[in-house]
Image 1 (spheres, rainbow, N blue to C red):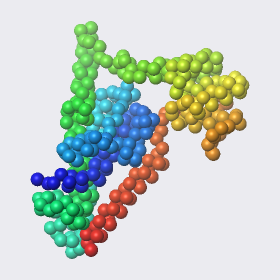
Image 2 (cartoon, helix red, strand yellow):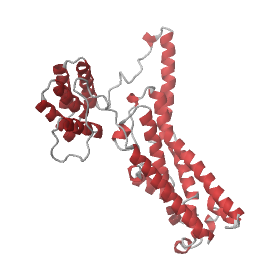
Image 3 (cartoon, rainbow, N blue to C red):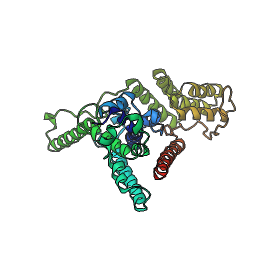
Image 4 (cartoon, helix red, strand yellow):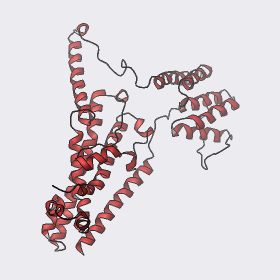
Length: 364
């Protein structure tokens, strides 16, 4: 049996696997309509946002663990059960795909090096399949780590193995694993289909009503009530009934003081009524209390338009062209795609450089 110290070789694979796994969930949820992933900062290349330290520790010692789980709100999906199934399986699928890619790429590179007589052909199998594990276990760890092939193994075999194990474990149909969520989603789909069939046969009086996003109790009742007042406010706003709109926006922020879009639209309604001071107060409230960056940025833009910037203003603020007669509707949270893309590229380059340097050292 391998000395437990050698399990530390799986750490690079865990970092990659956890990040890939949770990004799979977060991106799937975001594109299917649950924007809380962007709001919570889950669409990020920062591995520390995805690593569960307890899960990682147990994985190293016991071979079973988990990343930091994400939560999603199925009420935001168009197809509640199908989309929930897709989100639940997106993480394991991302791990499976990564495992296959890493395996093929590492095996191909090492095979090409062996064909060029740069490394021994036996080393290809030892590195890709970790077949020399029993021999290494017989050596003291302090001596074994001096072998450069150990470090190459950490960035090839241990990476694809970690991703494969993560994917496999995640699909176990028991709580709290993704497989359990996927199983419940499939059950829900069949139940919904069955109820629809019975309803079409005019047997609906004998059928218990299905819990749908419209009838299920909201997970965040306070936010849901604020949404109701905000939506009514935008309806009044579009009809140019500004006083009624302002009243609804005030109801929204009284229920949820961090509801940024309500502050922004309240300011726009005041702006349309040419009540500049009240508009400035509403926009400043957006910059101070809003829980989302879009509302804060829009508040700064409106203050800039009213030439009312003060305090810790950002250096660059886009100018708003809204006269206030129409509500602000760009309230969908959006990730910082530039930072996300740069982060992914940086991590990929780091991995390539480390693996490349190890291969060069192995050849030498």
